[in-house]
Length: 470
Ligand code: GDG
Image 1: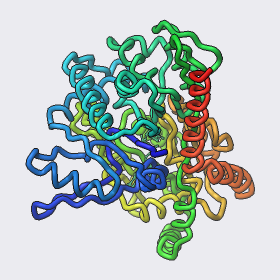
Image 2 (image 1 turned 180 degrees about the horizontal axis):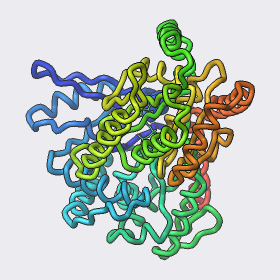
Image 3 (image 1 turned 180 degrees about the vertical axis):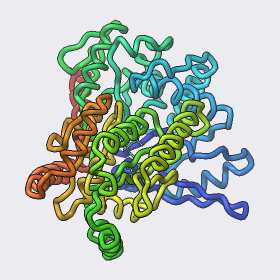
């Protein structure tokens, strides 16, 4: 059986040079995890290539991508603005992360969201065969399972959501809540990162739709839909091996030689208000202010990767971060020392590995996060088993990485105390905790996640077929 993956973005980076497109496979977690699947026999991935492609050049792109088992859905700039930046990132993203006051319920966003989901559906319907397993990814395509089910009642459809699913009281605020849920329940299997997300989805569906729930099974007339938690993992071996590579080991040695007696604290995120970047800075400032003994003893290395910076709230957040970093650095900096090293850019994965391997503490304090892969990548990069992870209880990964120092990201005093505890944690204690977390991240890696989901999808379908033949 073939697998057909469908996501908003194809797993490629597109480069246009001298009027020629080149596609480079992306290194993102999803692309790595699903690499074996879509590169395998006949399996394919359908999605948007990442930029607007003029009509007269679309055939060239189709041919180039087909060689990589990839099939494009072309979007116009207007669709990108309204469907992606609008409905997906100005409505679904804030509401699903509980930041309801950020939502902008524009009718034109909804119109475009429906139209683009239909576009994805017709692209998929042209490509899928009767026995294919279809796996739809994430919140940009909530209507797609329902659209496919309407045309192919017997299709096998899985859906996985990478961001949280909010409680009923939050989800019900969305004007198009019933339509969204009806889209989702077109799937046979619906996966979330955590048990809580799955539970919120089941209770929301039973309150807004005429469906019943028996444990984790939703019953919609004759159909049964399974809802389960599948916590996503990372490519553990890749991060473990990178941290052991000669280049990274040398970089780490060099850094340590130049920064003796300095405790380094690392923070890495996309620019996003859900990640708690501003609150983290406030906690760091509080620490310098109330415990001046740490001045010249600790530095925060803060990587913020540019993201969605055309959306107003992201622009404001960027300005807020710039100003706060400037304020803290100008107030506390000494001739010999910098409190915060702030980078507003992305780095190659080798540099990321050096950051992970040098950081004594990794500070991951999102206000809300589906999973948070950075926390797992830090663990996988700590090959000598030292290091302290400070982790928000609002990140999905906090359910697995229970040996981290767990904090409430709204409690700045709690974050400050966790940093102090991290700085002073004896090496034996660090190793005890790190060893356990490394075993967890290694075992429940991204391959495990893919296999688990696909196996469950097969089981669900076999069960449904057995009901049909009874
Ligand atoms: C969504 C959900 C869920 C970061 N800086 C650089 C770089 N990165 C990579 C990291 C990591 C990824 O970006 C970020 O993943 P997260 O999981 O932390 O966060 P989101 O982007 O918000 O992802 C999240 C995830 O989907 C998966 O389901 O965990 O909850 O919000 O892999 O390494 N990569 C490179 N250079 C950088 O500078 N190369």
